[in-house]
Image (cartoon, rainbow, N blue to C red; front, side, top):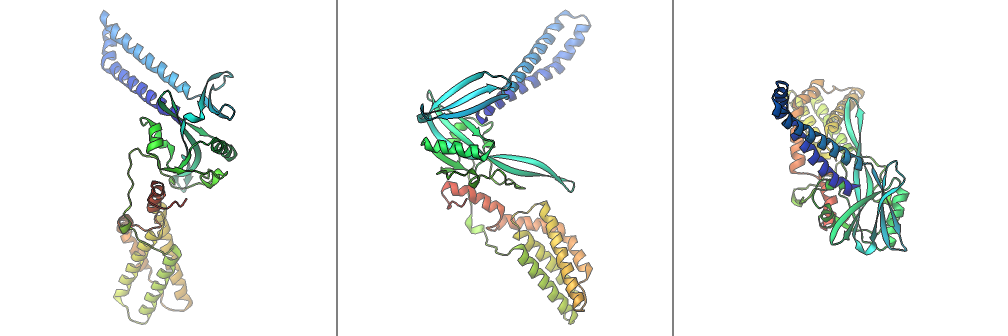
Length: 378
């Protein structure tokens, strides 16, 4: 119902603005007029009456617009007549409000796109969003020289598969995009944006919608980009680094380096400088961990602390087993004095010198592949 929502949201916002103006006039003009009327001034009732009428009209229009959201649209395809049929039904009413038949030859674009949904999940006192994506079929058609569009959503994958199979059998121009349709709401002429501004490529449907958009898969971050009108996408390849170390590699390297520091201190090669070297190692490991992550959010801050704690406990356990001096706890605790500056440095490094595996870079590349700048790698 995107097409309907786009127009109705504008009307609803205009009605709301009108109601706000009436309410302001009631405070500025209505209340003094009410007081004047109570004092027996006869003309005071006229502005008060006009404001009441305005508020009533705004309320009536709001309720009328709100009821249109209860309209249910169903769709079917008729191969004999070679038309798509849109059927409008009011909830709770058996009679059909209206039907619109769209000839196949009037359809100029059919776009398979994701629609972003999310639920709020509470964990450890924090509320986070879990995103998932449902497929929607956008259809742009022409009628009497004007372009229109509508969306078809299905509750199950089998229904979506059937629709796409039928649209493909009808030889309609199927394309696919990874830009979420929520960006269409509220913009002027969304049908033009779909045809000329959406990043899309031709689609040869393989019969299984889940290979394109898996509605059952959840993400703790927005996976597909929301369409933004007029947005330009660039990627400076010379600033992107290849960083092949995984978290496990950083953990092993940090543990080995800390053991080396302990052994050197045991052999007498490090005295006062040993603590300083230990702090440097913990700080460097913090930066390596932050750079190795695909994402870097608040949850990953705690992940870094947990991993460095595990590094400390691992080295301490090994030191105890081989009967050598253990790593001083003050060396590890001193790291927390630099925790906030290290977070700032981590963000700056990721922003100025991102790696190929970072989500932001992969996010841009997913979009650029539709622009023809990169190979498609869905």
